[in-house]
Image (cartoon, rainbow, N blue to C red; front, top):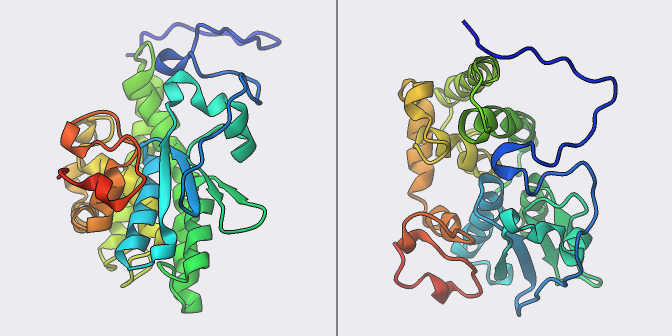
Amino acid sequence: MSNEKHYEPPKVWTWDAESGGKFANINRPIAGPTHDKSLPVGKHPFQLYSLATPNGVKATIMFEELLELGLVDAEYDAWLIRINEGDQFSSGFVAANPNSKIPALMDHSTTPPTRVFESASILLYLAEKFSVLLPKDHAQRTEAMNWLFWQMGSAPYLGGGFGHFYAYAPEKFEYPINRFAMEVKRQLDVLDRHLADHDYMAGSEYSIADIAIYPWYGGLVQGVLYSAGEFLSVHEYTHVQRWAQTIAQRPGVKRGRMVNRVWGDESEQLAERHAASDFAGRS
């Protein structure tokens, strides 16, 4: 039986700056910059500003996969954005992404530089620019896009929903945890049923759909995300487990997961990435 206190919403909502749990210091109901600071610019065509959250990891995996394919024009600088310290609210970052969320990309191979924000937009932009990791066949391309947009619509229930109330909220309440746990398990079942008959999300080809989904759902079933594997019985989703293990072994994925990471095993951290040699000595 739930012990939650009854809450009656006020007629008009007002901002309580102390609410919000772990991320209260960066949550606010307005947009725009809080301070003036330009973004650094390195020597490569692509300048990425990010952190190794699941959304940030999508972009760094994509770049490392492009480089693994021998596409030297995909060289990039990856600058660390410490979201807990509010780096995403600098004037420079807001100019790159008015939504103040990582990752944000500036493509300096164009004149003027092209800004790209939202992780799925970055994946699609790079896939189209380099003509890789997106099927050429119309039906398979459409299937990849289906799953790319599925991830963008579904992951907020896993992250902002389940992840927040299970791992980060200042208090644990039965209703939201149960509600979002049910939805996350439904999503895992969607993936498991699909992957029972497909090697990858779009069929036989690895694509940006896999790159988008893996950091969230692969991370969840492999125990990286929220440490909720036992709670959600992720061992039941055998096809998702197989798919995640396959992707985790890819060299580009291994490198991409390290970039802009500043927690965990030191051998798996690379706060900023400016050259392939930066990975030397890391597992």
